[in-house]
Length: 154
Image (cartoon, rainbow, N blue to C red; front, side, top):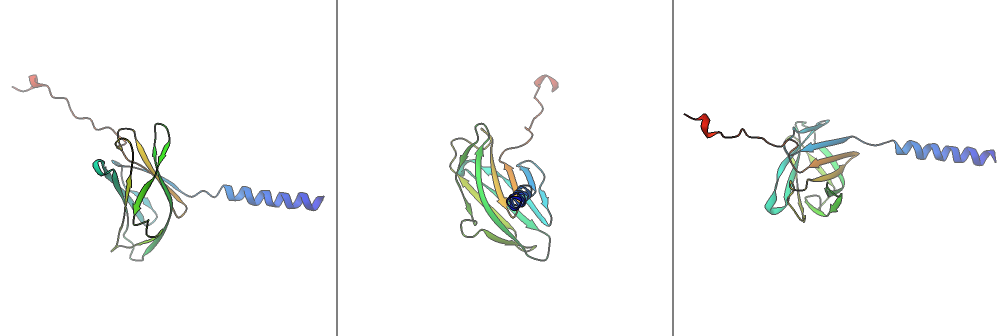
């Protein structure tokens, strides 16, 4: 009986310790600053609405090549958490990619979504190594322009 309790206690501890090993999480907006993940810099190009595509750039200043292993990704509409399939070039060819100071990586995503990226606020959730990158495909801050008052001109 004691052996069974001891064994189940050990198994429980192993399972619980594995649950807490969550990697870093980063959030990126189209109008935000690039993210620095160690030696890797991550930027997003604003979506090309007509083609329903966008790209995320991984670069480094390190002279040594850096291998990145990518997992799954999904596009999510924020209003109702609906998930949409997307293709990614070059991840469709291989999940492991290498970057260096001479070779950046441009991930081009395409998705079939019912509205524009900014209209209903979509985001990409991408996993690489132990990291989760959430990329909001719209501006974090709405741009405001000064109003025009024709009376102010003389």
